[in-house]
Length: 252
Length: 241
Image (cartoon, rainbow over all chains, first blue to last red; front, side, top):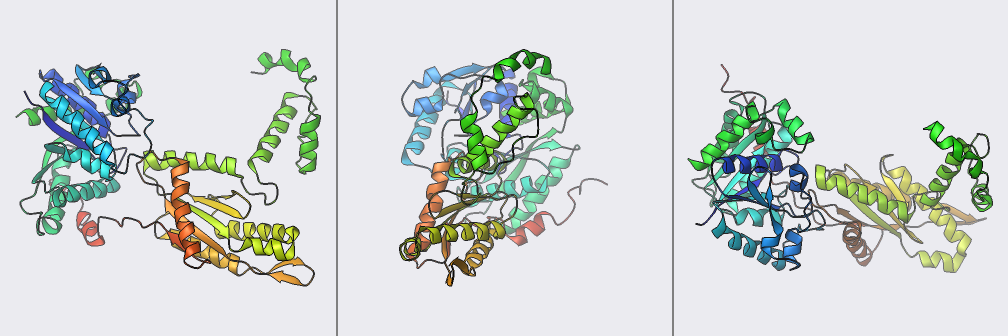
């Protein structure tokens, strides 16, 4: 077996990237998939906060060879596995050869053991974020309907299309205020991409696909405050349905 | 809360506060208007001491310690909220000459005047600190990249326009060099790394002839105005009837 690798990124922070990653992992696990979430938000990791885990060993310890990869991978609530980054890593915005080699080595080592490896990247478009995205076959960009999120999502998608020459990027609209909003926003982003990216060398045949829409739902806030997975706390709510559909789309 | 602390009160009288009170008196701090040794009075004393230990006595600016705390806070905001924050480091040009030719009292007068000129050139929300002898620093939260050079120039011009009377008949003019660096957005940095970046630019400003500001080159926005206007061209509800 070799895992499908999916990077989850967002451009802007605070749009629910880690929330989507963790709950998507849970939804995939519920479909019988063996899932690892690799927290690549070096220095600002909060997957541990989202999942209410208190890791003793983190990616940082693997990097510095204080422990083995096996020791740092822990089971998370929700039936998947996590490799947490820890928050003590300062300024991993510059991509040193060391960070590069460590991330590559770790991804290659875990791939044969899982069906899915989800890479939760940091926010922004720093070198480390772009590099951790480049390690994945597929990319999911998380955006919310607010203008700054859309602008930053657009910038990220553009860089992925032009620099990494990706043919396709998936979009999930988080905090959608109504059904169909994701479709509209994806079309809007697609129009700008068609004009400014597809028309340029390196950007041909680029396609932005809507992979999911997660409703703005009061249950999300409740689950986040309780530091529980939405998929476990409120499996029937509208937002959870959106996450299930997202998992379904990835497995289709 | 009051009932819990009440039994402790008699013991408070045994506190030896002579040094603390002498320090506050020397600094001209207002003593709290409350019954001596009451909790409220002691709180006032502690607050006054805390304020004293956060400031540079000569200029009244924030000192290096509390400046580093401000930097730390700003780094958190930048990392988590993607705020745009600028750090400026400043140094008075050829300050040693002032001290050497006119004496240390003149030097002190220059430092005070420069401190005031900097403070007047920035927003109330910005933190101006004296970080060393003739060195200053300003942290500017929520500072768009186009505003950085403008504010640096305003500080530079404010200082260059000073006529500082250091003794009867002796009026001095000074200049400052400035180095600026933005904190990397969405990245956990450290005060030390941020200071080092700004310091490199300050060094450049000195090397390029002083009385100027240099900035760390910024990555310009990846999204052009044309792209933005197309992105937000129509309301995004084209699927509604």
